[in-house]
Image (cartoon, rainbow, N blue to C red):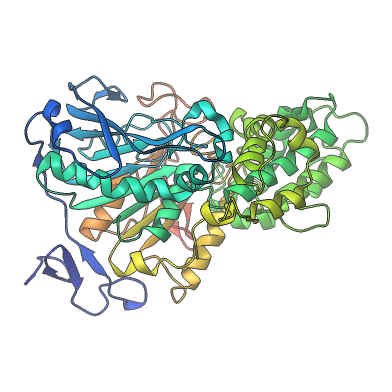
Amino acid sequence: MQIRPGACSVLVPGVLVAALAGCGGAGGEQLPQLSAATAAQLTGTCADLATRIAYANTTITAATSVPAGSLTVAGTAVPAHCQVTGKMFQRVGPVDGKSYAIGFEMRLPLAWNGRFFYQANGGIDGSVLPATGSVGGGGPLANALQKGFAVISSDAGHAGSLGPTFGIDPQARLDYGYQAVGKLTPMAKNVIQAAYGKGPDRSYIGGCSNGGRHTMVAAARYAADYDGFLVGDPGFRLPLAAIANMAGAQKYAALASTPGDISTGFTVAERQLVSAAVLGKCDALDGLSDGLVQDTRACQAAFNLDRDVPTCTGARDGTCLSAAQKTSIAQLFAGATTAAGARIYSSFPFDAGLGTAGWAVWKFTNSQQLDPGAVGLIWQVPPEDPATFNGQQFALTGDLAAMVAKVNATNGTYTESAMSFMTPPNPSDLGALKRRGAKVMVYHGTSDPIFSSDDTSAWYDSVAGANAGSAANFVRLFRVPGMNHCSGGPATDQFDMLTPLVNWVEGGQAPDRVIASARGAGNAGGVNADVPASWAANRTRPLCPYPQVARYTGAGNVEDAASFTCVAP
């Protein structure tokens, strides 16, 4: 046993335990400090690795050497690695007779940093995306594989060719919800053991959207398996969010000036009008009018749709909203309800990013093309009949209350409800991961049109409430002003949260801010078309740990994060 220099900790095998009062974080609570990962080299050759992997219910289909530079991120070469592909639990579904398996790939660096990253994918899964590991936000300049992590990616137990009809199979539902993570994780660690002669010293899981949901579910169900959880724009109550989005589609259809085109219920000119009105009331609340609303909560009190946006006295022309629009849109932002007035999901904050294509596609397209199939075929009990299912009709005319009831239902075939298999059990109770020294970093765009940052903020408040009023010593939430779903919007949406998460998990350095950049002209990670022309192309801002907000100090370059400080609202 030894004291680690410069730290309030005692070193024991694999764990650093706080040794001095007041060194543990909130309220002087002392939490374990996990030790840092150590590097290793791939043993043997990639070609022979397939013969050295033996794990139950697993078939390795290939092990292929990938030279350095075959993959790049933001123009930077990804180092040489070994790509291993395979399947777990191959079977034929007893209900639909279709073939199922959990398909995966792993990418194992020749020079490994001793860490494992589970790449949790988005949407309804179904594709084994390249196992590179996102660091967060849009236009990443690095990824986990490039940093030396061993990374896994999977299809979560079904082929994308099935679309949402995989939900007819009860086991495929459960694999998609949470069981694929539980099955893949020990297998992946076994592969790493075979590849490097030791298992991972530290394990991380992360993703955005449904990937954020996977990560939150893992934090609740698999706390012992991971040391760091990187959660982006999480749909952790995804079935309810999808139903609420269809509730919006029904209201926008009723407002539409062109029948059959629900986007005419709230046109781009009208959405830009509302965003401008929000900025007019809220932009300066953080000490600077710069096109960003930093104090989201104060903005909701300052902005009133009925008062602050002109009401049309004649035809709608993009300079006003009709009285009917104001009523319906205000209701949707307050939180969509059933016909009886029961809240379905969450409120959404008024923000500056409503006028973008990224906002519109979720409200007007995905609400009719993605959400109905997910609700009707993957989450309802019983599911709709795939042979006769009409997704658009379901979205625009379906009974919302009945949908809510069915995603909470079970029967003899589907013995676990969607609200059970898709959501984290006891989401405010993260005591298991807290007690072992694991950490959670969450980010969420305040202009996300499908999963509300209000919902994630309320979840964080509940976690704090379960931890004597503060969870900042093991969970931190960073809201991203103006960002749409996972990226885009008038936002500084380019950031790396994986590096500070590792520094927190393994070095005890709690992140007091994360620097985020705009992706203007010339950005190596890709240009964000929503960046306003008035901004510097490389504008930076601090993302602050909630409930803190960024405020201008009153001096310094307004395009530079150094001119802002994170303060209590």
